Length: 160
Image 1 (cartoon, rainbow, N blue to C red):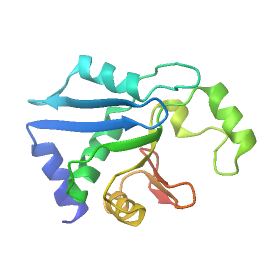
Image 2: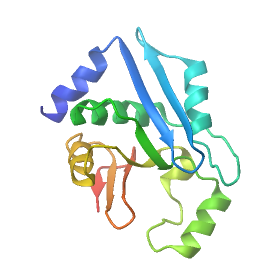
Image 3: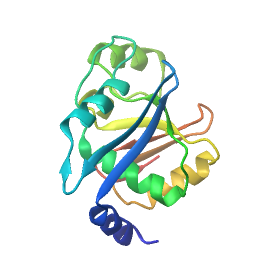
């Protein structure tokens, strides 16, 4: 399905739901975060918590358009499996530590702004996940097969 048609599909949904499994904490969340034309504040709070910086135990609001992007990716993948989360929000301190120890972490990552997530999906290859993300033509898509995740963000359209 073309990205434009998929974007329309997301807009037309009466309900937007996601499933997450945080690999580092073992926490799970199934949520309907948008219904009948509105985001649901309490559900967004639950998403913010599961996608928190687990190292600093710091919570920051996650960009709701990132959740909408994930909803479209999930729909394209045609699965009921949760997104396995490697990294959601990162505090500036955590990001600086990761940047110092890894070439793949940007100095000012969009993770700091709650606009990025590193994920994989059981039953789907990283190549399939990357393809579903690229098909959205929305934000950044990073492919990290050696680390077993795909990075997705709501920044400018780009890929690596």
